[in-house]
Image 1 (cartoon, helix red, strand yellow):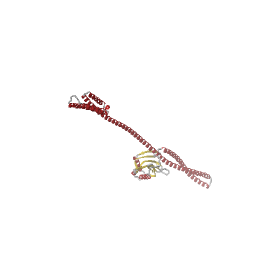
Image 2: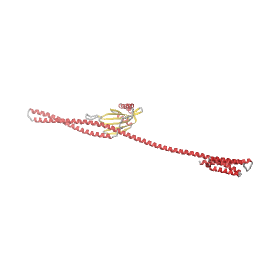
Image 3: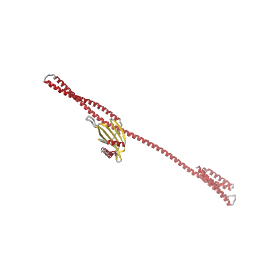
Image 4: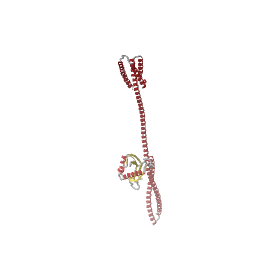
Length: 442
């Protein structure tokens, strides 16, 4: 701005010099025209002084005394000097000073106008810069707030994911505990029933042993009587000898039977001890079940599905099961969602092995399991939340009983599938396997 003012003043000075030369030439011309050498008409001086006064007033109106103080002071000074020269009859000097005052006043007027305009422009520019700075500060504050909000959202999102993962893990542990509890409860009930049957047979064997013991005692008494009678003479002696031989034969037979009963009783006692051992192990199994995490959360039976949706879900489950038993594995696999995750639990010799398998591994395992001949034992359907749940119990013989006293062993496979609606179709989003290897068919 200072450079602009300096340039303006420089231009005004050049303009003033040119104007002064022109006015002087005009005045000299006037002098020449009047024919009066060295003399100037008073009217010309008065006109010049009046013009100068008008220019000074105009400069004062645009605040030249403060905005262009130097030029305005020169105009006033020259104007006053022109008036003094006029009173002293110095026409040339008065005319020159009047024109100089006019030029200075006009320069002051022009400088004041330019400075005022520049001041307004600078004020507007400063105001705009101040507004821009304020906007920048507001923008910076908003960006800072937005960054903080985004950070809070990210933290909340991470916290939500962690909470969701924790809930999922807890639900999985709960499901595993429930399934374990159900499985071991069934095994305990089976073992308890077997133990009761063995104890009943043991009591019956003890009764038989006591009866055979009494029979043996009676035979011994008869033998003693017969031996006494054998000492007598004659025909009676031969009859007694025959009876003695008969009694001895019966005694040997009864002794053999008694010995066999005693052996069986000893075996029954061993079985009883074995059942007590099994009972103890069953109690340990129950304690183990209570300590294991469940595979899924306890079912509440509450659902948001309509009756029509439940019917559609059950129909999809039926088609899924039919495809399995008809060996149509591709149709069976078409019911699984792409992001399926399954829990696979294998129980072998009272040891449990858990694994999470993805869709690819699940397909591989299903193809392997489909190669065997599985028999359907039981099918159950439930609803929970937005899912329709199918529970299938399958079995296959792996070790037949060698005789009537032996127990056949089976592999038992419990499949629990959770199916929900995806568009117009129903897809399985979670499956739980429980495979019991080499166990009685409970």
